[in-house]
View 1 (cartoon, helix red, strand yellow):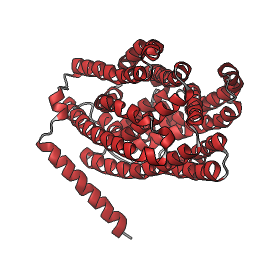
View 2: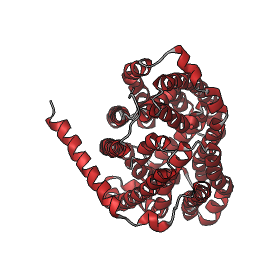
View 3: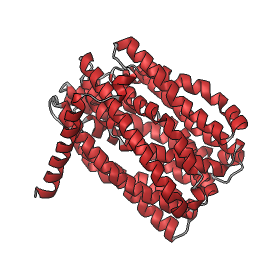
View 4: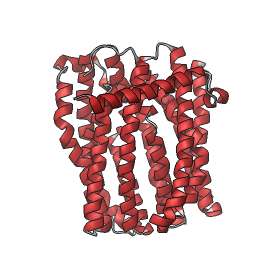
Length: 460
């Protein structure tokens, strides 16, 4: 693991953003190819069933208590930033133990519940869910790997791990869905294999890196139990509420509208999530902000500037995807053309989503898990009971309105709390309009990209 305390955070931010953004371009190409093959070979109804399967998988993943991932990433990063490498290694060891146990619980839970889900839904999903239960068994290892990569500032390995997953998934979809014509069953198998195999590929590297600074006494230097049952309970509760929301809406929408409509909405939301994942600001901030909490002025500057860049990138990316979808969907996947206007309507909430991504990192860096829980759960508690009303009265348009209200309310509550607690200025003018430092940052990002490219192509 990295030794000492990193001091040039801007340099790391530039390099981390370039590596992650470049890797995500490859990731998106692989994802687009996989999605294209899936949509070409699955009818909207089957794709809707796939989204229902994923929502059930997400719901049972709650038993893995992965909501503490962000909190543990910030804590490990803080220990490394202070030079306490033994404590960081001991914490990572405890994290691995914790996730191994909870992942086993989640996997057994889904496997046992599969027949009941089939019985109550009236759809035969048992075989699919039994296969998908294997992914939960290895989810804990994946969480541990990502915490290690992010906290130790290893963006290349974090990106490579994700890209290996996507390559395996694409190969599985091509072989089982396109060539073997196994349909939904082939998609389920391809997804499961893509989750499991990269864990084994990267296991020697991660184990060796963590063991380098590990000793038994280092385990007791961090109060794992206090963190887990203190701040952690709020992170877990927030994860439960968010996951409950994302798991229930497909079933509620399928009941009031149709399973095919669930497929269309899911495709639109998938495109929306691709835009957010292309902007690596969250990865960089979760490594840097915990190291800056003692300097409120620098934290405020990073937050405001981070929101500015993220909003710009989201808006440009969203408009580009909307144009591409309007041109390509009628040609390559005509059965899913109805997803385009749904996605276009979702673009209105992109600025709020972009800002909330950055604001999330302020809560993690300052160990305000309870407050993060409150600002995220209040919108869910208000809106989720209203979803049937929106669907019944306004149909598909009602779902769009319902979904867009969540990030708007979350953004309003987050900015109110951060202003109140820290005094950071979060005026809209500061967020949307550039200043002289932006030119310096963007030119620095371009130089860093050129430097990394030269090292990659010309260094033997």
